[in-house]
Image 1 (cartoon, helix red, strand yellow):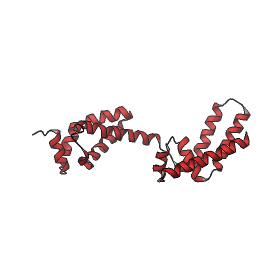
Image 2 (cartoon, rainbow, N blue to C red):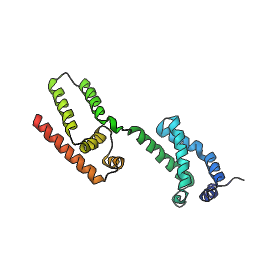
Image 3 (spheres, rainbow, N blue to C red):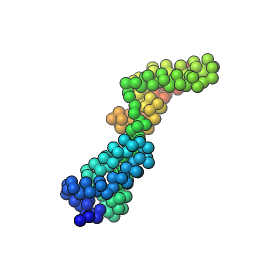
Image 4 (spheres, rainbow, N blue to C red):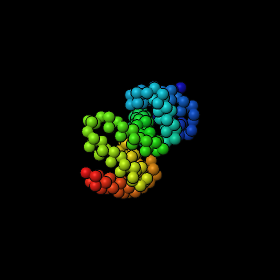
Length: 184
């Protein structure tokens, strides 16, 4: 006997694994196609399918049929999981290599610049000013400008209050501004 989505979800709430298998069989291809469209990566899309159904298993009580269908809820979860994976891919920052990333950025920027010694000197001055910052200010600025993270993401990543991150960024930027004005 084939159960409709509402009955399947009720069985999943009661921790019926057979119902979960049936839900997976019914919607795994749809979840995979949504994930693949976001990520364009087969392996990661398959991970998204697993993560999506894991979230369904863990959060069945959050489903509210008044807000939409089970399919819409599944699609929303899959989309969020895929976007999270996409963000993780773009935000893989190895803190041990942070100072080296500044060197690499300097090399890229220097090679793209015209052969103007003044510009190279200014870029080198900025690099030294960054490295002279206190480690906590350097870290938040590096994560922001070279890691592409927002202040909220930095706070979450470093497990710091958002206000602390904002203060460190403001102080670091002020020190960079002062160093820049001294040298120019």
